[in-house]
Image 1 (cartoon, rainbow, N blue to C red):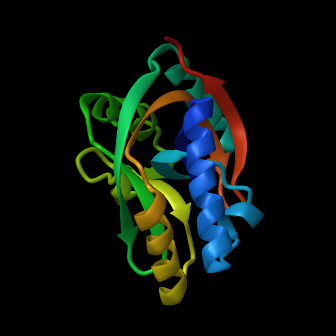
Image 2: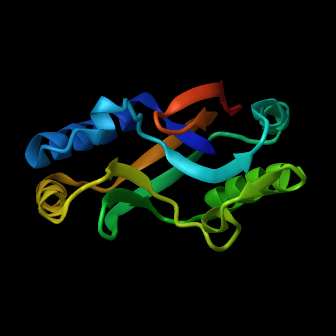
Image 3: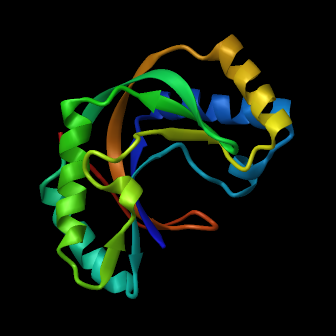
Length: 175
């Protein structure tokens, strides 16, 4: 399985990493830190037989995608294991998701997860994962006390393997 993910500007990364570390410290769940999962927003999840075919199509996005701002306005949960920061779904995110979907959906040897198809995608930035019920409550308390809405700039996009998270290709988006 492979992920296409968006990455953020330095200031946003610092803030999101701080939330990840605070959740890990308070809950005792070190998944995000021990697996070195950087702050990111997954745009697509793809099953493919060949990494090479994904890489060649991934580079097509370099000329199509631009930097853009998102407003991270709230937090949410995917019950029972994940807590995340939630951006407002705007036209930039819609265009980004559509472009990525159209680029990879045309490849016969791939299958895009039903959760990452246009109009069925929940944009989110995971801050804690594999949380128990008790750890989830700790994570909620951390964010309840410290979360502040923010504007983040998406500056890079990457193709990665999962478990552990490992970038295969990553590039900066044009202005």
